[in-house]
Length: 149
Image 1: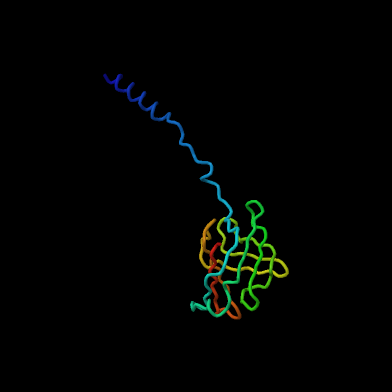
Image 2: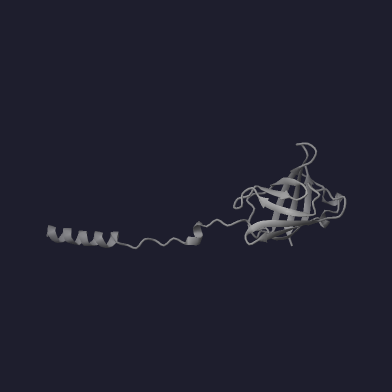
């Protein structure tokens, strides 16, 4: 009786220990570059948490981001004269400080500048993006909220 019980336990252990390994989704471990390609328009601007959107023609400010495959490539900016923005480049190149989990956008062309993201994480194919900059002194903080067109 003990031998039969032992044999049954041994056979049961064999079947339990021989289960197939679980399949891992190969795409589940891939990290993708954040994609913000397309045209973005300003919907609001705050200075030290005070809405100043109505003081300038901020709605004329648009940023268009272009990718080369899945790599950030170039940008174009259009705006009405006199609308404040951290740089005056009409076009150039852009990239992120980290392609998967960015906290800054770096712009380069006839000048170079980096702008922090006010709201992280930046989500691929999301519809909103906020950029935070300081003008003049560290106490003057501006947040530009963009909406994807």
